[in-house]
Image 1 (cartoon, rainbow, N blue to C red):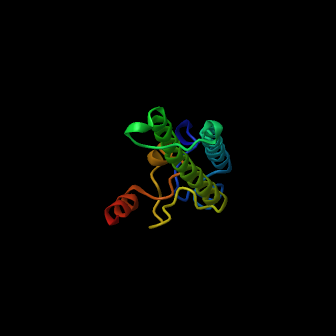
Image 2: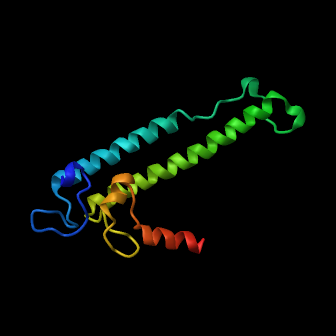
Image 3: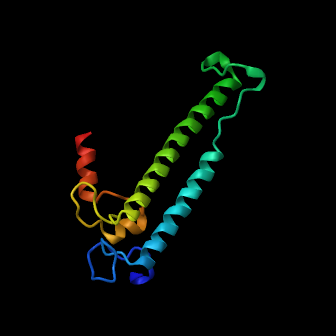
Length: 139
């Protein structure tokens, strides 16, 4: 592992390395990090299961709804958080699939190597910063 980290870079480095320059040891370490993150996300998602209103009452918004306004707000927030966690789990799964395919560490838009620093911070990144910025500008 380069520099003691599992993210040793994405360039080709010789026959002892994987298709995109990741050694088997590095690939195992990366897979462990990604799986651990997926497990964390799954646990957070499980903790967000929406509470069922007592007695089958309807949750309402509005000035006169009283305590139910806060309950409705909380449920909406949990729903939004659950969607974000689910998307992050999909991103982690996609990175795991790219690792299995030997494409981990390569930008799926321009095929450039994703910098080691980016992968250390965001191991499930599948797009380089330049392409990420380009996508954001097009939105």
